[in-house]
Length: 260
Ligand SMILES: [Mg+2]
Image (cartoon, rainbow, N blue to C red; front, side, top):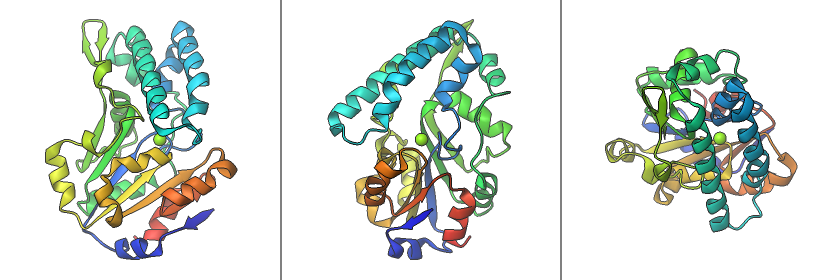
């Protein structure tokens, strides 16, 4: 189902070349039914790692999808979730090989049409910034495996470093869904983006809008994928996104809407 809430900005962006893409990863680039990048490693390792992850996930995921929680309170909760999740992962992630191997049978799939969309962006020299509060190392491997890690892609995420058989990440500096915003894009990249006439933003939760600066909202076409709690959340998605693609829509639809 397609909801178009702002025809003007859509017309402005159509058939244009002077824009950039800022896009979320989990369940935006991947399907709504895919596991999040944070869930893949526990799923692969099983045992205690999975048990700890699931306990956390079952508690926090419904809160993430709950738009009745006051904003500041939600940020606090999401930060708490990220810290716990990355602490668990770091405990069990003893080598980089685990990341590569965990993707082999993972429930992580590109949304239909993503491959063609990314290829088109690459061929037209359009910068694509992927922002993710997930595991950057894993996302990079996944994009490589799917053969879409083009040179125009800039991945901003959380990266583990490996030394011996230990992994390290600074949980104080995590990008969580609570602080995933424009300020997390490095300045040299922002300079490139600022020169673009328009921005195409894609996300699957309302908070993804914060990937742009508020000052850029007027020139941004924001597309929201809504695959969960559709009935409850349709109104808030329609109020926040210029276009809402509900119920497992694809990037073929995005391309069609934009007349690429
Ligand atoms: Mg997402």
